[in-house]
Length: 105
Image 1 (tube, rainbow, N blue to C red):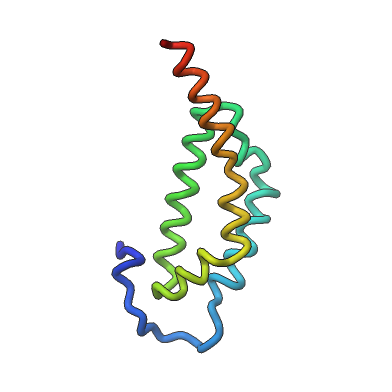
Image 2 (image 1 turned 45 degrees about the vertical axis):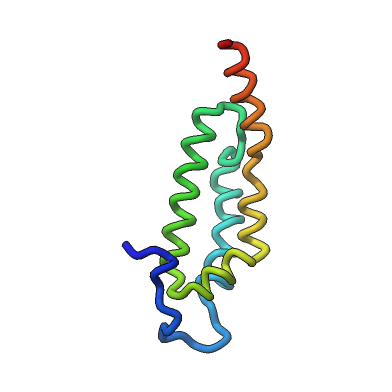
């Protein structure tokens, strides 16, 4: 599998059209929210970590499918991409993990 950094900027695309970024990704985020409402819940830190890891692997795979580094940049700048990343309540997750570690000490 190729990495986003290894992608060629010369991909056969329709100028001004970035289907994955502008059509597919914006549908994925609300779909996940609707079908997996507990996806972003940090209450069980082990489950949260597993879901986060799988989700970030999915995002990386999606980025590889974008076809060019420019497309990946557009994806990462897309409001739906920011919305998805902001849903992960990482401060709460780290607070829960910190509390568990502190108790063990």
